[in-house]
Image (tube, rainbow, N blue to C red):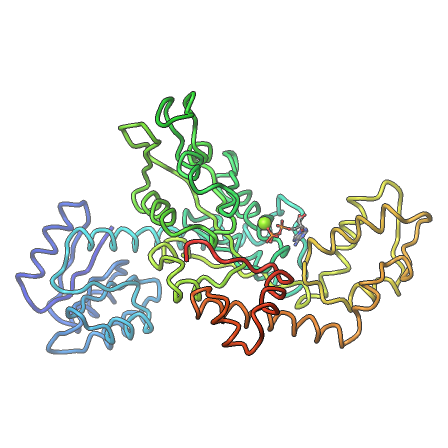
Length: 444
Ligand SMILES: Nc1ncnc2c1ncn2[C@@H]1O[C@H](COP(=O)(O)OP(=O)(O)OP(=O)(O)O)[C@@H](O)[C@H]1O
Ligand SMILES: [Mg+2]
């Protein structure tokens, strides 16, 4: 693969050139912006190392020119040490990455490799994208709404890549199903899809569950145990509820993702890990980062691609099709739903999203005596919830819950202080915490 080195200092150019050639790249040099553009017009050079400060043309302008000629180009901008503004600006202009001076060669290699693999995948993607868009989905994944079509289309495209995916969505929006879809659409589909619920594994067992252990590694380790990462080799690991992972375990996970190696407890030789990571959360990880509850470096590792699953109330056009699916799944005889009943379902707010819809259909099918589900069969709480007032009420509840959480976090979970801040008594605060299921977050 060819790399173009653009720098006005001959010594710098020759150091970079020598290094890259040693690593098997073909290097081409240009001493200024004009020369770089000239060479680039003659032939497409996929990766460009561009010194930002050069006498003839500003790095921003060279970058823009190159992007105009071929937007596929991956430009790694070399900026002055600590020039954060420049770095941010060139990234916005379309640079693929940046490096500070003095250039750390190992880091340079990492970034060039990353650029190359992005080009390769983009090329692959171009070829297969048509095929991908048309191919059958291997799971029943319903979504005629625009938002869901977009989510599925993203899933198809990212599935072909080896990169991590982070799925966001409220409870019951289909995060797990989406993770499975990414796996099934990926070249890893013939290997395991291993699910890990980060909130459910006891902290002290986390490492041995994920990375495994050797017999006798600790008291109670009666035999060798394979870790979940090992089960997922060449397949996909699904890290559900990643936002709940305590901080010291985040560090351990990060290390595995960075080094692509893990060491089971009691083992000396690390094992190479070849696993695609899909993580999911219903929490705002950026907010958790701000509160110091989630590591930013881990976030960047996991969040190469984001898929957002919108709540059901924002894509009600999907409801009829989902209802059909669940009727088929749970009824043993043909059952139909009356239009009034469907109307009620369409008006409801669905705080529990698709899972809640699935449960109600299951219940209706089980209780249905004839072969039509009528509006009057729908339980009372759903009946009343189609009024606008209910919608508002549930929204108010959400707001109240958020405010309480905010106050508790702000006051370091000291309830007296949080209550003071909210202007309510401590007793009322405790009652509301119980009502909304708010518990002191771990790792605080
Ligand atoms: N688009 C969809 N098409 C068909 N079924 C769906 C869809 N979305 C969700 N479901 C079904 O709804 C149920 C809940 O989905 P899932 O478990 O994936 O949600 P989740 O976002 O992981 O929820 P939680 O946050 O509570 O873990 C599952 O039975 C799933 O099969
Ligand atoms: Mg789930």
